Length: 317
Image (cartoon, rainbow, N blue to C red; front, side, top):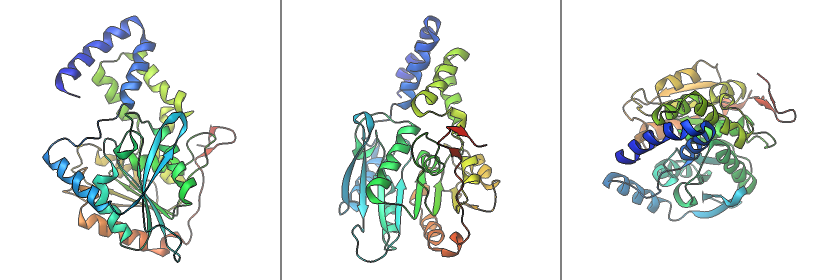
């Protein structure tokens, strides 16, 4: 958001809240869900996007249609039914796209695996300017329905949190998407901090903040505090690799430490020096991810325990 627009927004919300906290909270949620333009900004971003697009040029492409006329976009590498191969799903972070993760996608495809790479609604080639966690989970489920179960899922930032939410069955009446392994790169462990920070930026009072957070429940069927990926990682007894940089300025390293405290099924790899964005294409990170996915011993005693009982729609914790 440009500086001038940000100032106008910060001034406007307290005025609206003075008239109607409900209106202010709902408007804040719509603004929260509005995604950035898919057009690259800046010379480095344009160069990275162009290079990534070229690397994905040979991939098959698919439109995944979701409820409400929204859609996700999927790339597939090494598709088809020639021989037995692993199937991986890759998701990107907020304001990004799979084009920026092409190095990771290509590295995974080079192992011979079938790789499905997903542009969420409002990002990349999916179109639109709207996304929230519930919609992201629906997109992940649509990918599984279209391509089949995944042996592993790999997500960056918001995309990693969405994968864990999908694996934990956090959305009522939507079957969980449970892979054998999960890789979370620079991913938050919960989302409450983000909503609090957003409300503070807009100058929301307590009443409007409450409405903003309640909108999560309205559109997903779950409270904001239920989207706790850290708890989910400790409940889904699948091997989880968390890759994070202590110099990450967008998602604090405290999220990775929170994952690390959840038990022996979670391992943390510190990729210091690569920040929040370069981490997805750093050669040492690609190597660690490939090694983790190729370690068959990790899944021998894996067990799945769904975080939510979707039949009763009550949290089991």
